[in-house]
Length: 268
Image 1 (spheres, rainbow, N blue to C red):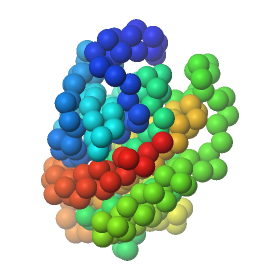
Image 2 (cartoon, one colour):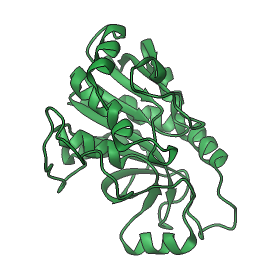
Image 3 (cartoon, rainbow, N blue to C red):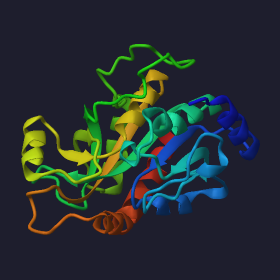
Image 4 (tube, helix red, strand yellow):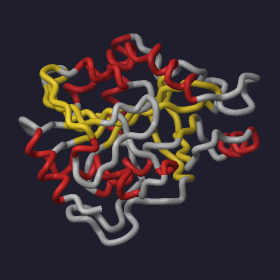
């Protein structure tokens, strides 16, 4: 995907330079309410970007201040399972990097794999498994990115420590664990969940990994929070559905918003 036209169009609409990018996952759109003096740019208004196609994803960039800092919020995201290329999925992160952001905070909705991480939990991601078997880094090297980015610490240790400290201060329970990124769009089978657990995963979802790969290739520090919206397959007698994910996100959004507000001043 060619980014020059998209970058020019986005710069024309934004009144300033954001310090950081915050990516909002399924059901976490209410975080947009934290933005002071918001400027909204629908994805479809940016050349090369389609409109968001999944319920619970707002489909827009929102620029404004949160906790006194200028931020760019990505209200919604693109997914590989929609048929988008890895380049489109990672384009918002790459655009944000070219706009001048210095860090990326990613949120997502995820299924809980470990019995110690029940629905309603917040998980600070410490590592991931890329089981999508696709990467936005395949092909020519993008300007400003590494050909072989180091992924020994994909989620910045200092940022993770800051998030954990703020969670303790606010008395918000916070787990730490490994995120398994899968292609979807079907939910996993019980056998697949048992496999993921043996591989070391704590939560599973269908996003985040392509965005993190693009950010790290561009030398941007990343921190990620997973909201556990449901038990993964085989851990509950109830069938899985996307509406459950959205409702859980809405219920927990107030807690996530408190934590994000506290963390924003500590982002690079």
